[in-house]
Image 1 (cartoon, rainbow, N blue to C red):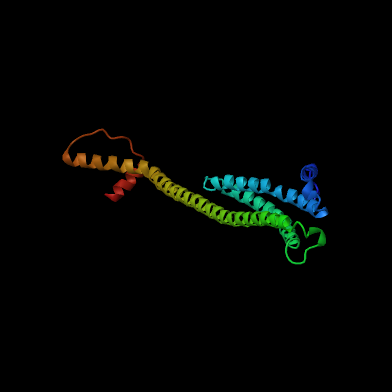
Image 2: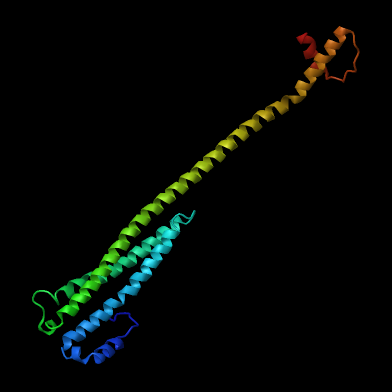
Length: 219
């Protein structure tokens, strides 16, 4: 029971010395005092896990924190499983010390072992409740990740559509810009011809010979 534990059991000895009338029951009461001390140390662990779970739950709907929350939830789930693996066998063992054919040394302190079993049952219920809450939180986080990725994909698709429209517009504008000198020359030629027909003289800009030949052929 003291594997990798920094906590001692001096408090158990002090308790037994404070209650000499119970200590007279023999080694059965000492066993109960030791088991009760070990089980009581599980309650602060449960409180710490529940506090950590509440903190993660508050961050579930924070944008961009879903993936981090999933990792934290899986780590928390693993720790609750380790705790459950420690509690379940102990609960089964304590059940044999107060009901049915109990060992002789425990015959006078069965009520005390029943109290230990009640504490272990409360701890087991709290662990199972946390596991259910963690499972629900993991599903919610996965849904949040899916929603965020869908929103990113939608934004990228919108930007891609805008870029495609801009590219097409730039291509059309570039084609018209390349034809702009030819369009200006045709406009000047039409104005000059119309002016001559009305008998009006206007200054004429020099036009390349090739374009005059083409214009004469078109007339």
